[in-house]
Image (cartoon, rainbow, N blue to C red; front, side, top):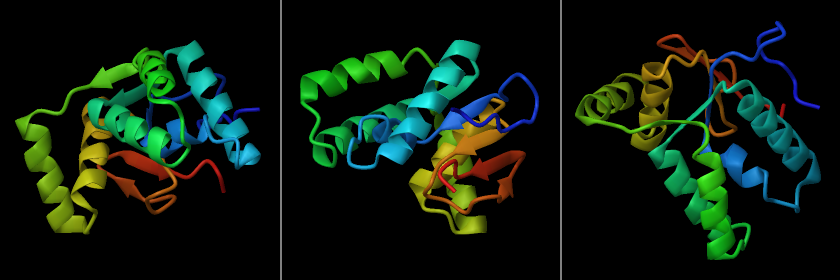
Length: 146
């Protein structure tokens, strides 16, 4: 069962990192898979999920390398995940990500995810790759697997 992270009946606008998408296909960790599938379904149903083109690219690479998903199936999954709102990074996002990297020490790629979450109005970023509970520019980093 998905945990509502806002405490209300409606999920907040939420940005998904690629690792959540990958776990939805990873049968090697059933607990994480169940959480990921449930969160994806909840946010698709409520139309509150957001991700970027970068996340779709990272998902595809990880799905075929780490989970050993067939490339054709991974492509179909990208099409499904594209039903979330998509953010296409622009020059301002790149520059803002560079500043986040410089100011806070995030990797450039993580900083770009944070920036896209911020620009798209998300209050929550779901990821297991960054510091749980930290808030950057109004975006709270949440590791749903804790």
